[in-house]
Structures are given as C-alpha cells and as structure tokens.
Length: 215
Length: 289
Image (spheres, one colour):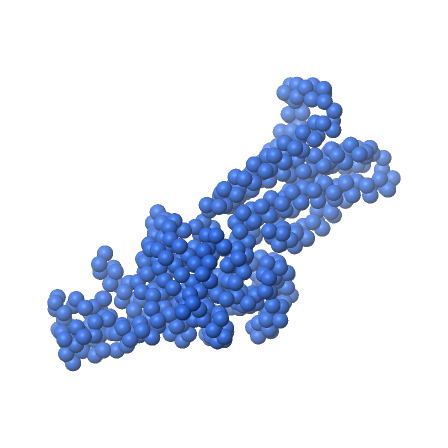
C-alpha cells in the first residue's frame, strides 16, 4: 500500500511545486489586502484540492491507470486505502506549506496577526475542507468514474459562492451564538474530528464499492 | 505435470454476454494461446484471472494458490501485458520504472536495462509520445523484469508491424526456454500462435470450444475439399461447417474415418490451421443459431 502512496507523490511532485509558487504569490497579495491568516488557509486548501487533489489523485490519468495498478501486487483494499491516505497527506501538506509560507511572510515588512491559534485554525480548515470534499468525491469516483467527478468538482465552488450569504444568515448567527459558549480551540477540534470521521465513513463506502466493482 | 494455471467452471454474466463454465489448465513451462473472435470474452477472462473483473462463479488457481485468498502474493509472480498502454503517459520510462519497481520483491534492474537496450527504447521521452510498438515493447520489458513465472498477454501483437511482432514472439520463446516461465497469450491473430504456442484454448461465445495441445489440434481437424455435387443431407453431418462456391465446397471436420467412408477418395483432405478452425467453428455456431 505504501508503494501506491509513494506513486501518488511521484505524480504530485510537479503540482506541489506549482502549489508552493501559487501560495507564495497569493499569501503576499492577500496579506497586503488585510486578509487574515485563516482566510489564506481556506484559500490554500481549495487551491491544494484543485491542483493536487483533482489534478493527480482523482483524474483521467488515474482512471486509465486503474487497469495497470490492479495488475500490480496490491489488494483492492490497499488500492482504496492508499488513495485516502494520500488525500490526508495532501491536506496536511497544504496546511504545512501554507504555515511555512506565512512564517516566511513574517520576515517581510507586512504586518499581520499570526499566532499558535492561527496555525491550529489553519490545520482545522485545511484538513477539514480537503477531507470533507474528498469524502464526497472519492466514493463517486470509484463508483462512476471521471464523468461524475466533472460535475462533483463544482461542490467546493458552490460552497465558496454561498459561504458569504451563509455568514450573513440568521442560521449562521444562531450557530455562532451557540458555539460562543465554547472556546475556539474546542470548536476547531470538534470540526477536525467530525471531518475525519466523515472521511473514515467515506473510506468504508469506497472499500465496499471497489470490492464489488468490475474495472 | 505441474499446473501453473487452473480454471474450474469460471462464469461471468453480463446483460448481453456471458462466460459460462470456463475450465482449462496451463502446464508449467509452456505457451498457451487463448484464441477467439473479437468479443468472444478473451480479455474479460484475462481480467477475471487478474481480479480486475469479478467472477460470479468458479475457481481459479495460479501456481496452485487460490486467487480469492492469495491474489497479492500471486501477482508478485505475474507479468501482465495489456493490448494498450495504461501507464501514465506524461511520465517517461525511468519515472514509470520508479513507480513500478518497488512493488516487486524480485525486480531485476539488469534485466530491465537489457530489454530497454534490446528494444532501443528512450528513457527520457514521455510514454505518450511512443508508437504502438514502442508502448508494447515497454509493457513487455516491465512484465519480464521481475522474474515473473507467468506472463499473461492480452492481444500483444495486434496492430504491430511485422518486425516488432516477430521480435516479440522471439522474446517469448526465449523466456519459456528455461521451462520455469509459462505464457498465456490471447490473440485473434492465429498465425502468431502457429509459430510459438504449445497449447491452444479456443473461446467462442463465452464457452471453451476446446483446450488442447496445438499439435493434437492440427492432427484432429482437417479441411475437406470436393465437388458440391457430392454433398447431400446425410453426408454433411460430420462437418462443423461447409462453405459452397462455384468451384466446389470446403468444410471443416474432425471425423476422418466418417469422411473417408462417405466420400472415399473423391475429396481432398488438408490439415486445418487455427484460422480455419476458428472461422469454420464460428460459422458452424451461426448455422446452429
């Protein structure tokens, strides 16, 4: 299974370099526009999802290569689990890279707030967003292939589009007031745990789908 | 005799097609040709053996191991070649090798390099820029570089130029020379098999028509040629199928004694090649349907 994860990272290398370049540019730009670190983490998670997630983990390349991958000495379970593991590593890589870029930005003459809480907030957003989106996409990808994926990738775009309206809605206000009883760290931890549980459930669904699938 | 591959009543049903009770055995150290017309189920059967497609019923044993329980272990010793390249086209040979080699305990870099050199494949060109022949040669180089004991090939010679094709067949003959490696080779180009196969399994309409030693098949089937006027309803029975033309008739049969009894020396008997057998058998099935 680890060889399959290694394979994903050989395929991701170029995209990762592109992601770093984009993050450097975007971070400097956003910080100059007074966007806070949390916002940059959300942006980086979406960028990582599109560049590395859709570009490599779930793509036409992968769909066509499934035949050859299944002739290798790996089990069907290993085939699925490796993909979920790669997804999680991409999420952590996105958070780690963005944190590193923001730390570098501290050396630049730009003033912004970047604390331990910002880094934890970044971890929750980066990992949470990427794994939740992959939780929806991967089982569909295994069941129906790329054609379905082309439609599903609009999910994060729709979420991003409606997020500003949601932030100004009464539902959001009531959620915020409910959550205000808890500390930020607690809320972020719960969000992170829930997203990982969703990811685990999605993995189980994919394992079932792939165990009966004819490629 | 040790069996490398054994299929027992393997079945797979689709809405418009099915493989029914496929059974055959491939002994160790031999080349078996899996023949059949396009759509006969050859590729599906190979995919079932590799667990790319799930079977509905039946048992498959490779190296004596149950493929339902020990598939990962079994795949360590299988080299699989598809009819087309399913590798990542945006990578070059070296990058692709970096992905594949760690999967195999017995990856042999020296063998890999020797095949790359023999086929004259560039290591730094993207795989998508390769010709059909080069892609097939690369598939074969990879399949033969981890000391596989069973090489499975799905239509490897389809669409190849004669030089590449002959070289490929020569490589396969070299591979089985040490008697440790066996080859299962699906094709509808039967002339390739006349050259190299020891056993032939003929699949027609999802069923095994026969699975025999090639020499035995050549001895069993023959083409009968004669004047159309000689034919009547009674003496047509021993034929698998008969084709009539202005010049006379020709038919496939495996009942030599009956043909001689019915026609005496008025007909000519010629050995049937695999293409004749495939063609007449498929036409015979159409007659029945």
